[in-house]
Image (cartoon, rainbow, N blue to C red; front, top):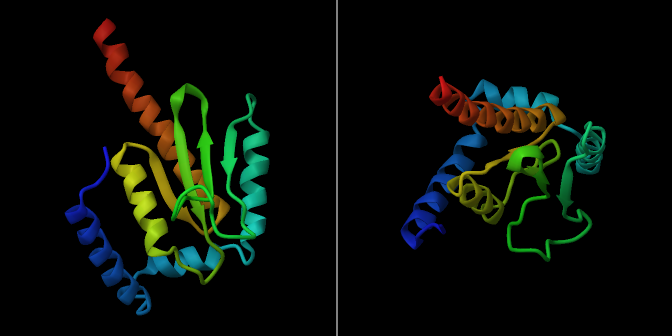
Length: 150
């Protein structure tokens, strides 16, 4: 279900406001994220690809090139990762000091609205947090089904 023009405009306004606030660095989370951020985006990409391959049943990462603009869709994320049990994690990687573009943020917001786990990550630890969110959502979905059997 796509977002409406009004929802998209409202999101763009929030992004613009957040961009202004980011420069003030009022949030301790911003400092924490940047302290752990990768210096090279390619290093973060490689860590994620390695992690996907190391799973007992390898995950399927759909990986965009980093040497040129996306040819998939405007703002498309760097990774769309297919996990077991129908889970999908969408990650836009950024190096230390860089920000996602409005188009990338819109893409991530659209993915979230569709019910996927998606986000911008500056470190491997943040990527693992997205994966943990997907796993937690899977457990939450399974628990009501188990309770119904009792």
